[in-house]
Amino acid sequence: MNKYLIVGLGNIGERYSNTRHNIGFLIVEKLVQKLGSTFKAQNFGQVCETSYKGRKIFILKPDTYMNLSGNAVKYWITKENINLENCLIICDDLSLPLGTIRIKSKGSNAGHNGLKSIEEKLLTQQYPRFRFGIGNNYLKGKQVEYVLGEWDEEEKKVLSERIDTGSEAILSFIFSGLNNTMNQYNGK
Image (cartoon, rainbow, N blue to C red; front, side, top):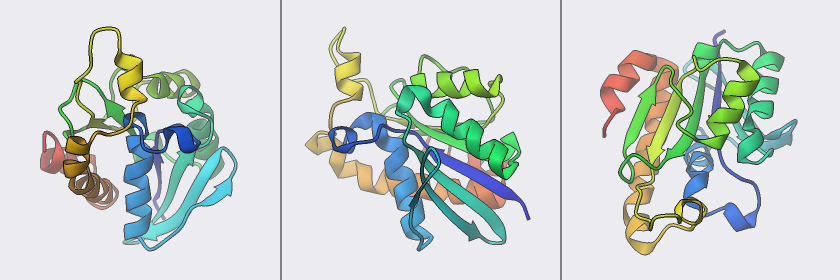
């Protein structure tokens, strides 16, 4: 049976739960809800073990904080012997307009600390990633405050629908493959 690892990046704790940086957590929480499953505390985070159309899925919310996400990803890839091409990392992206989806087979970390940690632990940039646009509506020098800030009321109006679309994109990745998913969801 093909195995998949779906990782939503974020920071643990109530302080971060509604921040832009935690969009990865929000999207995988929606995915788990759609699949009618739940997370359980396991090594390196909250994990949901489930299946979708004959494929075994491990959905992970690392509890390592963003800048140590690579530890959790490496552990689960190794433990479950999951091929890198079946691993999808979901994170926020400042360079994309709010709610825009960009899925790629590889790429640089673009300064994202979670991706940087994963790259360091896996010793490669060759893994699928799903970037979710959070926009860049911040003043010069206020990037950290913006990323770790909570969604404003205007953002919340579009967020629910975009998170739902993001969870559908993940199901497409699992069932239809990376290329079909990129064609269907990128830029949408």
